[in-house]
Image 1: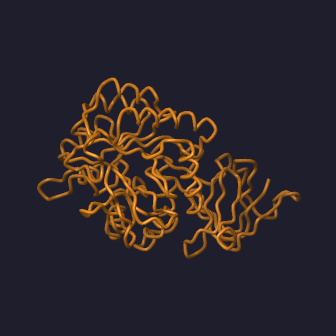
Image 2: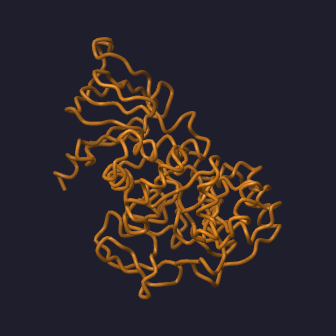
Image 3: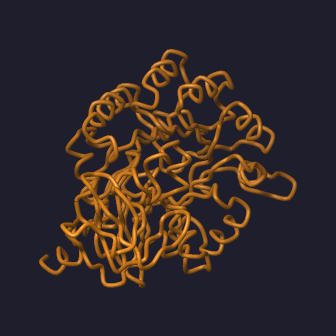
Length: 385
């Protein structure tokens, strides 16, 4: 048992000061006044820092020098998690972009097995593709973009939430019955890499699509005479939207504008790739060389190939355009947890919730992290090299 003191607690419902956060094992035991702490309880004075739930990233292709598509192994998942912790992300969806059925099945089996002992780390797969629209493929490998086959849809649905939490597809290219099969299995179906008309997008939402992937990117835009997928997403209050808040995939003012329309359905995602947490300047994604230059990941022809964003940077960008800090934090914690129906034990600070915490200063720089109750002083680790 230990407690964090002298901090501001961003619980997801309210901001608390002069309160202690009591941890026992891997769970939050209580939030209470400091003078009510048990006499035997060890305390960690955070010197006025902020504490929020650990960040939850619903779209992580890679980081720390590795790409999930390149090495579908437990070692990769461990590496992704270790890199994530340094920027406050305690839970994530390893994202497998468009590839073969064999790779998809390997990833499903891996995550299903890995989660037996790491259920609050890699929460489940995000299958981004392969049932996309080639017109909006972005960096995805066109060789593997294809129409769904009933047998594969059934296998993905059979794995269900024990392995797959999120699947991105182009609703105009997938039968509504297949969308319903996935949604009925508890998988959050997301529209992305799509050229859907407004009407096709709404039909997809009605069939069970509950989210859009990297809002504004790789999708039909909102035009006056053709609202497209973007317009449809803004027109539906029940649909979540992931947004890469790096200032490259979307203008920073678009974050504020999107938030006015989507509110608690707007979620920060990173779409991160191997350069995060490294000195890498190039890597391969979708069969193409991608170069990391001036904060952007781009192919030789200028196509964006994922990002080098971290969740804390995404939060900082949201705050920079006027979003209140507690709301920017909810976009990285409570809202993604709710989107994937894990908000009963993740995304908030409350008794019984998993003790995943992000600890940062007023400048939104990471100071520490708590991973399933285990505290790490990131500022000390950085000082020691």
